[in-house]
Image (cartoon, rainbow, N blue to C red):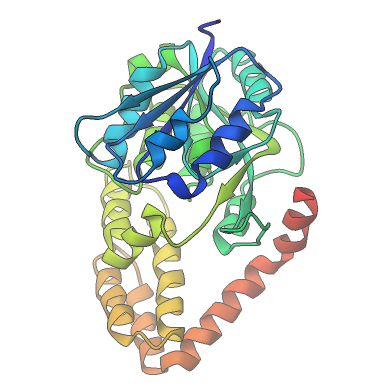
Length: 326
């Protein structure tokens, strides 16, 4: 078996969707690759599910203790051992040409530390959905053609918002050995920080316009937990503060905070909305806190109005994304 490319699935209690993920990877048009299930000491049936697949390309490693998300991603990086590798997620679905196409692109771009592709967003049942986050990410893509920006240009774009879908990324090991592993200080912005770090090191990040991954959004994701505890926003504030000064440097954080604020307000969760206002007051140079506080007095009516405004801004992309996914 060739050592050119590996896919390492980072797993923790992923029994619900893991079989579908593994099946999609074993069904790749490119057959010569290694598939490693890297289990973070799961307490469910994840390991048994992985072992049920009798494919010679598949191997399993199980951690002796449960760690953090970036720790398990780093285990996945180290377990892969190939010239190129993907850190796959336990609940997503890969289109048959994903690996073939992504390897083709990164091999053709020797200055790239990684390449990523578009994704189709699906719900728990696998249905295509027009999620606001997906609509936002789509704004960063042209209608066609590869994204082949120079590192400084891509850095300026990427700091406006993380439009890279983490499980879609294929990495070049030679570059990763120079850039380093994922930063274990972070739980939510782990992939965003890494992309920014790779660009700051002078490497390219290539974007493939085809939607080659079905990215699942559901209530059990770490993203949802981080939003409830404000960890997401703490990490975004720390990351953006570590970058060189730039106009509207905190805009991604402000946008995410405002979207969450509108949702909490619409749901009549006044205490959570007020906590977001207090967090907004910590953002350097931001004026969002003042009018979020004013909206807070409007209650759920103001929340629904903000949500409607957000959808009005994004809805122009909705039909195009769903049509492209079919």
